[in-house]
Image 1 (cartoon, helix red, strand yellow):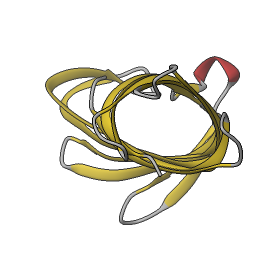
Image 2 (cartoon, helix red, strand yellow):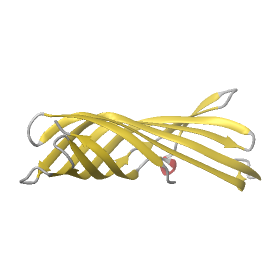
Image 3 (cartoon, one colour):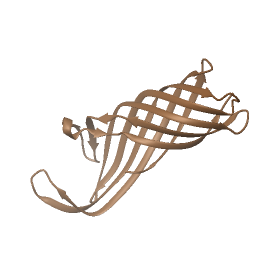
Image 4 (cartoon, one colour):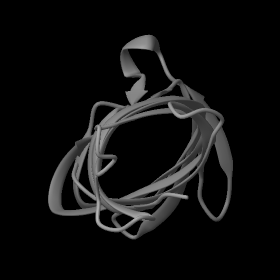
Length: 171
């Protein structure tokens, strides 16, 4: 699935090269399919419309490193983070609405390049990967809620690659 993401990093550099901070990131995706043939646990099947409205939120500490060129007009950046990934899907199956919730440990790694456009601002380009695996889900509708523990072959990967263009403030 494709979608959009937005985020915010706050960092403090404890030396010329090493920084620590906090990362907050949200990914959103929507999908709607009509007339999908769905197999049921009893062996029968039905045709129905289905939709997903997915939000994946990440928050966690991050370790940064940046290396400037000799003129301090460009910077190469690396980052690593470990945090919490929260998964939410507001889904429909026919006329039935339900919510799927879960959370897991998330690991992130990024590589970026900044071009300073002034003394305090850089135009940044970053490619990053964020990964986590869901092993259980809480599925709720307006009447009930159940927890589903997934078998290992059913684990749901939240791995993704993000391409980001942003503005970075330097002090």
